Image 1 (tube, rainbow, N blue to C red):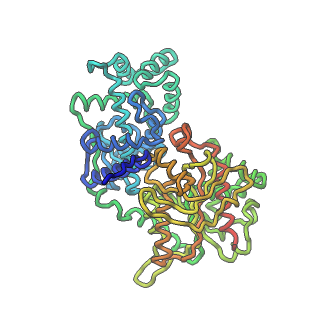
Image 2 (cartoon, rainbow, N blue to C red):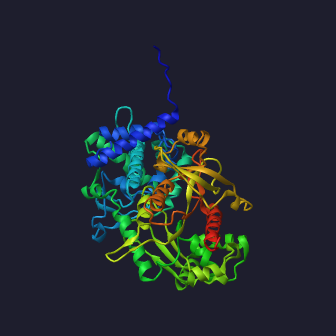
Image 3 (cartoon, helix red, strand yellow):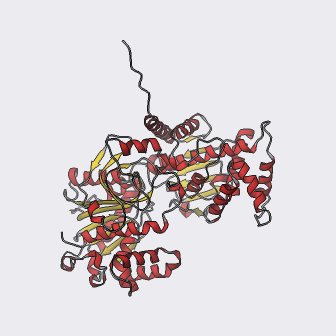
Length: 566
């Protein structure tokens, strides 16, 4: 009998690498610690190199340090982490009440604490997705640090002239001036394996933020710790506290978060009103409902809305945003800060106090319906990955006491977010018909109240079809994404929360009967990146003003349906 040998495709190899990554990470979490250059750490590095995610660019090029990926990762890790040999992931364990300074990364809200010169603690409150995200970013850093170490030594294992110069620049506190700038960039570019021009450009991006150290500092310390581990046996390690391992998966933070919201609704007699849940940013719904009345004298129509949104998005217009917020607070909006640890802030909007006559005409509000039903909008900030299931599951649970059980009067649930697009460009819109959970057989068809047709005529490309809920944006590679795009799945984009939200909503509506079985659902995403196009990944920078138009267009379509009876 002969057997046909079937060669595995790159997509299959990549999916296998993702599975290995998650199995190893889960094992290490249960174990409690690992060394990045021990056996287990090596397994993670090798799997990540096989996967070669798009967001990490040239991670597989042993001669070049990946610069775009480096700045992307540093924006999401605490300032000074490159100096720390020991990194500990913790639960909420009281460090917030200590004298340690809280360090919050620029692009990821998480509390971090520099315990001493060598140790950084990172607080985990968003579940497993956050742990996997962190471990992947840290693994990328160690891979790049190894490249820097190799370029810091010559063939005889001695420090190169360029590395000695780098030591003087960083350890000696040398200031980069116009006079020595080009010489310093020459040394740095050789260590990075990059051109002078590439080094200069990424240096400017690093200098533009106070949330992490400059490029010279980061590169030097990454290389220094790698050299110390190699020459002096000063191992680096990552560990997880016992409390974190006990709490993960038990909805501790989601329970606290939901309880605070329900307490406010009960205390303010809002629980008997129709509640419309929106998961989105915390500015577009607020501005769409209150900015025109707060600012006054703004041009009408869609162009007026777009112009107002662009003005409010500018950093220099902070006083204008404060004016809108103050007006909103006087007209039924309550801002609930999040003491629970989820990092998901909430706005409760009592639309009975809304000045209906001063809304944008584009909303086409049914005034009589609003006055009679007095709806409430429960506006929640973005969740992160698996955390979406935890918070939505807890929010949709009834309020229970010894005397009674009060069901949550949820009428609609809307989700608007950023997502990677597979056919199209940054700023385009995606309308999902289903969420397909990557790496599993789980899929969640949606009766979406939003359609592509509703967005026609605004000058934006709109795509409709299934979307992938991925395990992490930092693990996606071209082969897997092309498979989902070109196979019979015909997926239009990828995001991290959709399947988790749907899992909670379907359980609450169809199994537990906690909310109406026919609760209306609205999902829409705007493209933050296209990971299949070089230079268009998340690492290439933020959307900027390009994201304003699709954000507000989706917001208006969601609100337009909420504010009408049909």
